[in-house]
Image 1: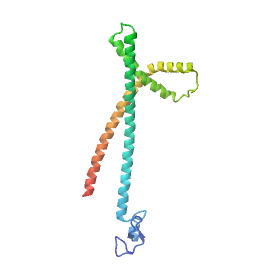
Image 2: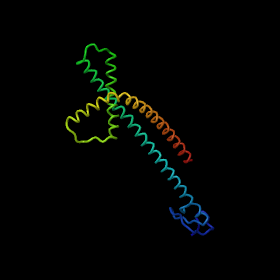
Image 3: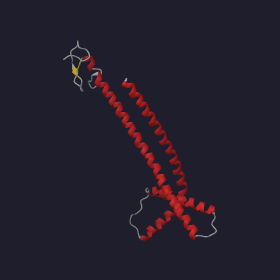
Image 4: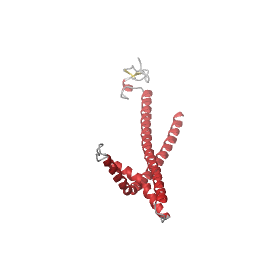
Length: 194
């Protein structure tokens, strides 16, 4: 058998992909032993796999960011419902001398309760709480947690709001980078076609 690239030389090895004969000089070019065409194809495949892994990583990161944003929206909707309930309760059962600013303050305070509750639940994950307790233990536990949620809610809301704004900026950057990458990929494919 003769070398595929140098017909005057005897083959000492064969390409591990396609089986073409290779002389000593051609066989030493790549490890494992490949012909030029198979080595180029393997390089393209490696680059495509690396690019695919990078796109998957970027998509996974973007999905996590979107989850963070949707979690904020979900808690905000619950907060709106809680705020409306507290304002309604005050308007129907409270004193009649409450002004508009009182209702605004009540709404905002009640709006932040779900953010405080979520924050306290997160902190609670670091402190083991017994699953077994009396009925009154759980009533007192929930009442204390609700009371603390009022005070923890405002800073927790501000933190979540800032985190969501930063998350949205990251999502926008990823989308812009994704658009640039897809444009670059299209240009590169057009250049390779010629």
